[in-house]
Amino acid sequence: MSLPTPVREAHVLAVVQEILPATGLAYLTDERAGSWAVTKSTPGCGLTQLQPGQQVDLTVAHHDDFSVVSAYTPLD
Image (cartoon, rainbow, N blue to C red; front, side, top):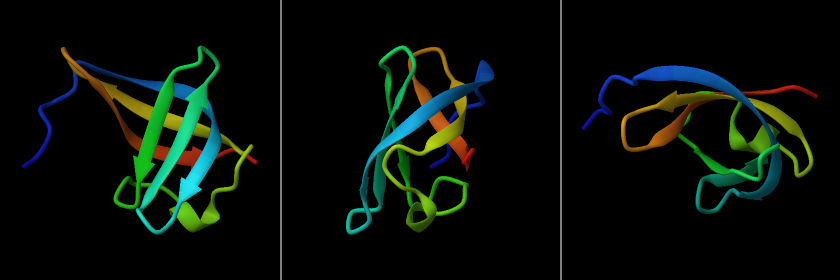
C-alpha cells in the first residue's frame, strides 16, 4: 500500500537522538521539539551511518492528516 500524494514537502533540520538497528528505527528531534522517525526502508544513507547527536536534513511529506519523513541526508 502506498501513501497518498503529499499536499506539500518541506525540509526539516533534526538531530539524531537514538538508533535502534535491531528494530530498524532511528528517532530524531527537530528545533521545535518535534519528534520524527526514520526506518530502515526510508530513503537515505542507512541507519548504520547515523550517530546520536548528528544533524540530519529530513524531507517531510505533509498530508492533510499526517506528516511522514520521505527521505533523509546526514549533514555532518
